[in-house]
Amino acid sequence: MGSASQWARETFGDIAGELADIVPACLGRADERARTGHEGVHTQTLEAYGHGLCAVQYEELAAGLSELGEAVRMQGRTMMLVRGHLLYPLRYAKKDVPVPPRDSVEPSASART
Image 1: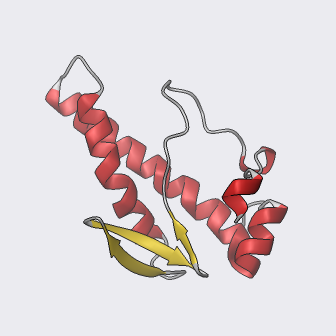
Image 2: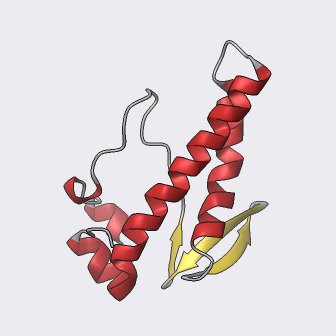
Image 3: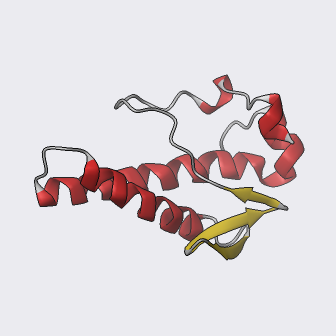
């Protein structure tokens, strides 16, 4: 089971480590699906990738977290409510850079409320 930050342990309790494994895996699968779609249409821009990722990130999170949370429909998307917290994927970079190790990043104070 993954290493969870103190914030994650306080927020999600005993499932924090499991979330620390599942969420990055879901987002990795979403990235792979979006890249495959982008490569399939042979565009010169990242437009196909971006539109694909926008859709599949929600699908992958819903599938991966189905046993830990409740699916809720918002704005035509299925999002996951886990222990009273809505998990919403945000873009973290415009460049193709690796996600930093999860134990090196703490959410800002505003993200904790």
